[in-house]
Amino acid sequence: MRIDVVSIFPAFFDVLEVSLLGRARGNGLLDVRVHDLRDWAHDRHRTVDDTPYGGGAGMVMKPEPWGEALEAIAVDAGLAAETDSRPLFLFPSPAGEVFTQATARELAGRRHLVFGCGRYEGIDERVFAHAASLGEVRLVSLGDYVLNGGEVAAMAMIEAIARLIPGVVGNPASLVEESHEDGLLEYPSYTKPASWRGLEVPPVLLSGNHGAIAAWRREQQLVRTRDRRPDLLSDED
Ligand code: 6GU
Image (cartoon, rainbow, N blue to C red; front, side, top):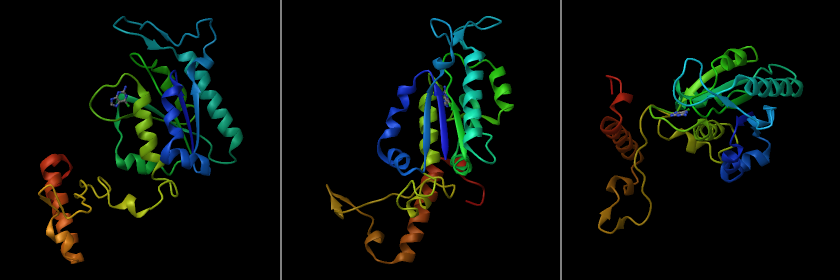
């Protein structure tokens, strides 16, 4: 998978070099390219923002640098690929659709993602219409709270997507039994010692009865989900 990122703070993405994703990039499973939006700003101060039409607080990102950046990436990808080369443009935004595990799974099957990370009060709305002439466009939010810009959100989304690409996570079984994959929260985990500071591992886990263990874990998933995330449960649960 190819992922391009456009940001005025490309250094946010330096941590992609380490751990899991660094290894995936070394393996050739992931081709991540981070771009500085200011490379497409041509005035002496490399200006990327301006005051909002209609007034209001804060600054808005100007359309021209974004237009050039997204075109350059789309053209480069088109030249590099033989078929089906139109990218999916993802703009992290608290005004977007909520990004879920289902979103991550869907995006993990794409060939080319382009993250456009906005700052300030947002990006001039016409940039999204222009991007739609170059590929598909989606605005995506991590949840109902506000970050200072799209960079941290894009990092979270990239990690959620990349770990679902076959070969990126060493043991594929570890992807199956985790929170949200079956619509429920994960069951609690324990390791040795069986007794620690007066706290005991639930005896069923030491019983060797695999049926009883599976039933206990399922019940724990339901109890936890009911307790912490009742919004995830349907009436049958
Ligand atoms: Cl994707 N961006 C920003 N700026 N704030 C957010 C967010 C995204 N998701 C939740 N809050």
